[in-house]
Length: 210
Image 1 (cartoon, rainbow, N blue to C red):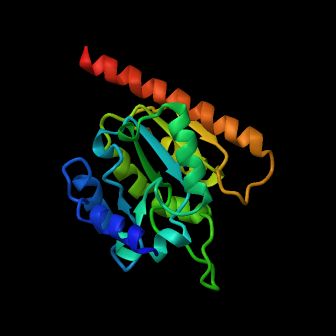
Image 2: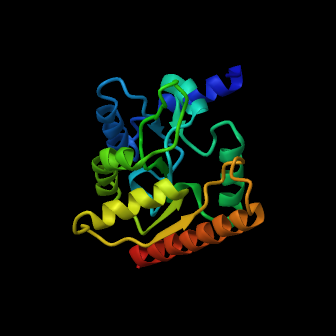
């Protein structure tokens, strides 16, 4: 990790208990029980005031490598975060209107110690954590899931029991460069979904202001 990135991470780490993210990072501390790695919620995002939830799969290697300076953030190194950030900015979705998180909040490994995507058992185990997260987002209006595991986990939560509230969910492919099939279509779907989410966030803001 470069000195500049370390300095930025340390600044962000000092802000994890700011009022808009303190309840969420209290959940993070609880989910870390047993030594699991769970990144911090990014204080540069919407926090508990988020109207849009961007739901990825599980923390990646670079986030885990950052240790206690690891965040679920669009500023993370790597092509996935860079592409997402570019499309988020192009879509008009304000950074303060959304929260980025993972359907499984802790890192997952195969028997050889390599990172792996979530499986059905992982989604079931992580469902209570996702339910806790949604309960801490009273302004939430729409969820955008990235990748099949995130969509499956969100749909499981909404159908395994009567949902406390019904949320629109937009499912798009994961922006990882490993997903090379139909790249132009993937980019377009992500952009349209984020534009739709941005419009929902703006409409919610007008309603609450009125």
